[in-house]
Image (cartoon, rainbow, N blue to C red; front, side):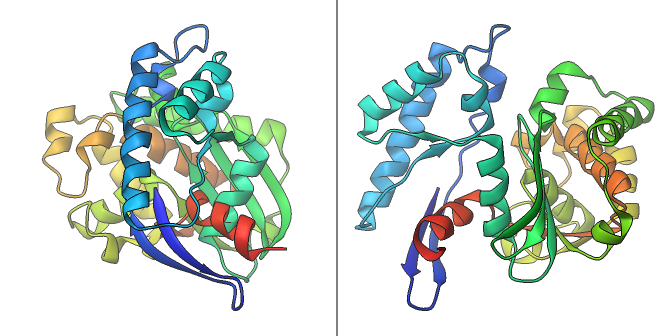
Amino acid sequence: MLVAEMDPADAQLQRVMRDRVGLRVFAALDENNVISSEMICEAEKCVGAFVDKARAYSVDQIHLFATSAVRDAQNQKEFCDRIEKAVGIRPEVCTGTLEAKLSFLGATDDQPSGMIDIGGGSTEIVMGQGERIDFSTSLQIGAVRLYQEMPIANVAQAYHVVDYVRCLLNDRFHFSDGLTRSLAWVGVGGTFTTLSALIQNIPWSSKEHIHGFFIMKEALCHYMERLAPMDITSRLMLPGLSPHRADIVVHGLAILLGCMETLGIQCIRASEFGNLEGYLKARYLRK
């Protein structure tokens, strides 16, 4: 969640408070893409607590939106109906295209930029400048999704996932090296913040040192190869690794490496900002 003050006069967004709970709704999808009733109950409780927190700040307006997992769910209407009944606000279910645009608006400024947003169920790639989007796509290769589909217990399996991501990108899209190499690239999501903390050997909660950190491809390869053969217990001993990401972290790193190699990216900046900021900017600050 994000609480922010908006000033349309000078097009500024001032962040007041952020909070997060990792529910992993995507992991609760069964073989028929139905979100379990237990997960819907957890979502009701989580969203309800967030709404109460927001109202404690005397906010003027509360918005609620959902992304990949709810977008994929066969019981999307039931999920939204129950959330609306619980908190009085109906979730807006974002398309993949909209999700990509919101993350780009939230994480970038007015310079020519590229963005990679690695989530649980999908990965968004966007290129553009300011409000102009030159390229945008949403791919069904999230960290949780691939964790369920492609096990990683060693370095060879990690690179197998990297190759899978590269093949998917190469088969579907054709990128110009001149375009991708000239952009300032930014990364959104837990994969980027976790890797930034690991490289700096700092606690994963040290947000002030994580936001804006530049990740080199060589460091990404090093940590993917280091973490791939480690068991969960060993990973949990690393200060930079959030307990909630210990199982899926290597899959996120493999997705990132596949994207960076395909797009010719050598360095990418981690961002704590993303689709939350982008949603408010699009609604209140953009034309």
